[in-house]
Length: 327
Image 1: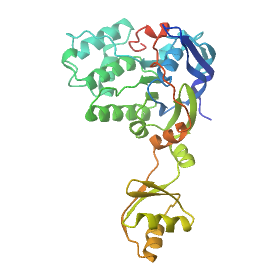
Image 2: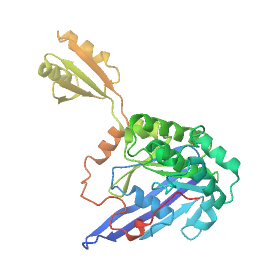
Image 3: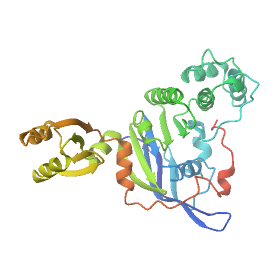
Image 4: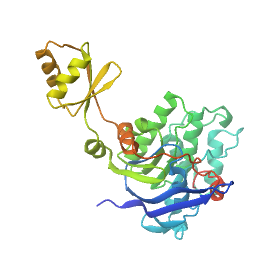
């Protein structure tokens, strides 16, 4: 059995807004993150992801429940495990006129890391060759890479990244995604918080999906998709009404999506084309729609009433503290 790097049991966070409204940001959350690889912590904006991370890092106080990092209860034993944890929750405050290397070297010196550690961190995030450029000239993606490099100076066993691709263009998202995948493959356990489900699916080994502060599903990505998502085939045919009737008569579940039919649970699309052809109805387009994390999330939340809530950390005094990466 894999060691659990992060565990929460019955974790709950409540607070009042400035207008006196009572908010439950995290509701009795049971979270388990195994050692190794990339674990996605997924949910829409305002679902409680950042609040949960802040509680794990001692930046917000839990209202109830238990938390453990590497088996140690936190925040009580946080000083014992923080050397094993790196985190980027907000953009670190680097000196704009200094180079990326100089910024990193100053931080390394303050925590007793030799210059070789700076070289290694820059190499791991792909900034070698751009490290002597001024920080203020960096693109947003390069700034995010330097922030992650800062957390890697002490060679952590656990890396927590909160929405690391926010604001990046497609090329920047791809670069950060590839870097995260390589970190997970190198032996670092990465907790990746994001609301971009399709993007995260490409890098995560396992996921926990939350909504309104509650755990909705957790497990291996492949298992989660295989267990919960039905196969859907999208069919376009000229005689749509007649085709839908024939498919329904044959026992298939059929629904309409504008000018197309959606047929549920048919593993072999050729069965649909053969059935319709027998009745002289010929398919113009047929696409087997592969399930993904986004479709799973929509299934999980379709009956969940999403109430208007402030974004993670809003009106929470403990969330106002800045986080510059745990070093």
